[in-house]
Image (tube, rainbow, N blue to C red; front, side, top):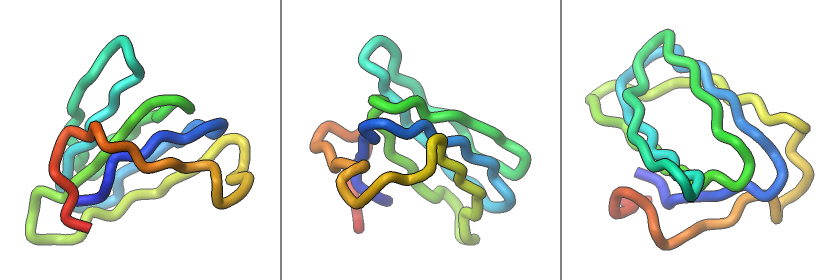
Length: 88
């Protein structure tokens, strides 16, 4: 499970290809967990804190598109207030 992250300027769009997971998103007004299974499409607006995890014994595989394109190494910031305790 990864650390919780927030993006400064980009939105992300995910499409799950295989596996099973969960993603937690918190935009400051609403916090929710969404199941990630093949065929699931989600969006993550800039400024939204998010964290995801694999919940099965197979790889969680997804496509990730950012809009606009990824600007630089300072785009993503780790945050301490994630949903789950990170393992990586």
